[in-house]
Length: 264
Ligand code: NDP
Image 1: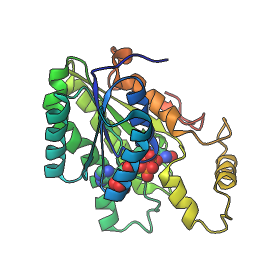
Image 2 (image 1 turned 120 degrees about the vertical axis):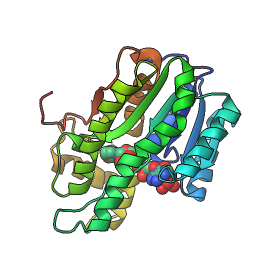
Image 3 (image 1 turned 180 degrees about the horizontal axis):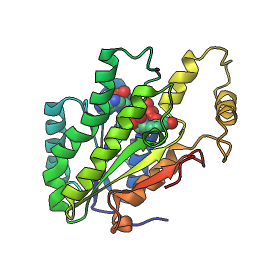
Image 4 (image 1 turned 180 degrees about the vertical axis):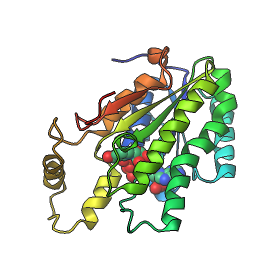
């Protein structure tokens, strides 16, 4: 499944690690111009070096930007338009989950989580909206979570925030059509920087990351018996972020290896 997207410009927030990095490479491979952002300068430089080793830097832009800072997002959007002349696809990917229960999530943590999940979509979508409207085939893809439909008590705030975010995306789909399509992928578990960090602080994790990941998949009872790979999420993002999915908006693709237990 592929499509030549030469001349198309793709923006990936949180494109310096995991799913975002794999997405940047997926689009570059198909000929697109790609802009990535992240907060940490060191991680950004390392990601750019990694990408440039295969694709060079002619179709690549990296900008240090926190998606929760509206002014930084505005500057990021201006830099992308300045460099590539427009924007065709925005991938709202930046973020992470919060492991916490109802008992141990304090008010500040609730606010932080709600801010990340709502403004992580709102600021970039508004910042790039004008450019996407001019594209003629503008598309936004939001990297969301199965938790939006299947909450887990040990991820109480993330689950609630993801459910609200999905509602927001459905409303946006009606309002932004027909100029911009907006869809989401719902991740179960995909190997990424997030899981590497959880492994590093997990009790009794041992020192074999791959073995720990395999055991996590068994413990969770994932029917496909493994975690997903960032490239598998990137393939779904590619489909939703290009005219391959030109008649799809307000929709979701499940990337959970069968972990989803809900119907519909
Ligand atoms: P990674 O930690 O590997 O990557 C997260 C990326 O987001 C990094 O580039 C990080 O860079 C960036 N980022 C985080 N916060 C911000 C911010 N405020 N502004 C700009 N960039 C930011 O994780 P994943 O690839 O796993 O995560 C990608 C998305 O997928 C996230 O939204 C996550 O919640 C979602 N997801 C992932 C799941 C999984 O199992 N992997 C499950 C469900 C959802 P930096 O820290 O330098 O800013």
